[in-house]
Every structure is written in structure tokens, then in C-alpha cells.
Image (cartoon, rainbow, N blue to C red; front, top):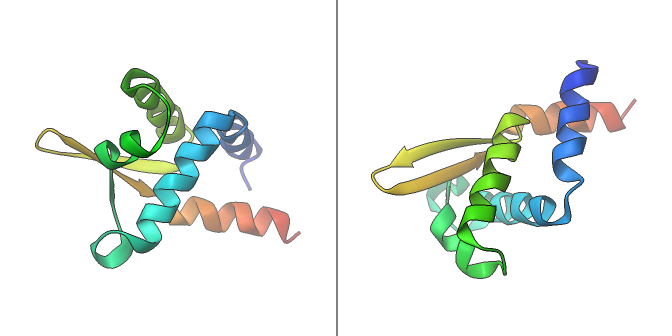
Length: 95
């Protein structure tokens, strides 16, 4: 287990807005999109009471902590939960 990596994860999720954004991405990944695999940031911006520049900053922080991956499709940004990292966090709590 990489302690520094886990510290980055928990630091990234310690911000309430970032945690809410991560949960929205995870929720979208599970239900809203084909194969439960992707989430368009434009859809999330509409559901949160946070400005687009702030969302962009939070997405960058989540990606830096490797909690999500991002991909550009034309002018759209797609976010996906890093399921491998989620498994590592689960292992941490199962110790």
C-alpha cells in the first residue's frame, strides 16, 4: 500500500464540494450513462451550486489524486471513477 497515495486521496476528498463532485461522478458512472462508464462534466455543473471554474479546479484535484480519469471528446470533458484506486481504498479499510 502506498501511504502517500492514500494521503492524497483523503486530502482530495476532505473538501466538501470536491467530495460532492466525486460522489456525483461515481453516481453517474453507475447509472446514467451507457455501460455505466462515463460522466459528462456539463451534466454535473447543472446539478451543483458551484461555478464552472471551481468545478474545473476540483476535477483537476480529483484527477491529481488519481480518483478519477478525464478524457476530452470534442468540447466535452468526460470523467470516470478510477475503480482500481477504489479497490485499494477498500483494502485499506478491510485491514
